[in-house]
Length: 120
Image 1: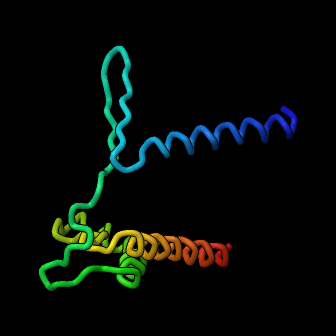
Image 2 (image 1 turned 120 degrees about the vertical axis):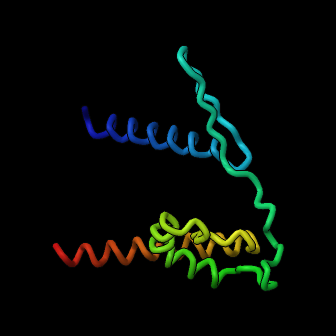
């Protein structure tokens, strides 16, 4: 297969993957039917606790989202042993918290990649 055809196939695969992921946007539902069974995949909807303070009267924002993203690998492992431990704060201010959380998680993987690259 020549390089141009490979590039076109790769682009089509990526576009198909992106469209598939976009179908899983919040509040959406995808149903997969086969002759033997039916599988319904749904994505989470709106957060009913957004912009509502927790028991201490706090709403998580960018800084807390960043921190929760940084410690997410530890908290996900801890949540297997303690069901009360969650890695994501539902009492948040929405987009600002989400951006902080994603930046924190991305930083963890960036640091792990940099550290792993030095060991080679």
